[in-house]
Amino acid sequence: MGEFLSEAQRKRSIIREIMDAAMSGSPGSIARHFAPGAMFSNRNNAGIIDAPWFNRMEGEYRLQGEEEAKSFLNELLRRATYISYKPRGIVVEDDEGASRCDWTRQDETNGSLVTGSTMYWFSFTTDGRIRSIETIGTIHSVISPKREEAFAGSGTRG
Image (tube, rainbow, N blue to C red; front, side, top):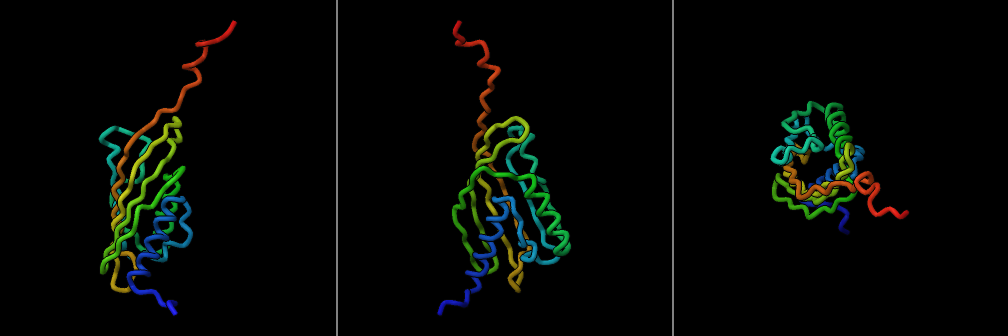
């Protein structure tokens, strides 16, 4: 009883798997979920504040087959390392799905902590594979690391 998933449950499961892979940085076997010619569109608001550390392969990419999808996803996930993340829900209706995730990451060049959210929109083919994913990332805050050298010499005891 309950062993068979509805189509909406199956799509929700695929989205959850994609989200877990994207946020954990471990692609696993998610490339199998992409239809040949799947489109991946990635944008963010980092340009607004000129944040060079948010170089997340912005633009649109058409993935021709599973091997190209694996290569693309490996590179994308290599550039996105999160300290923590919290999925904020998954919605599926017909051949569309959406999810949001709040996250924190650390800038590898200067140690700043960055918090933000990413919205994901999924479009599925009639056979339940992913036709397209559109993401829009929003940075909420950047917290600069404390510099030990800024404290050197202040408050020293003699």
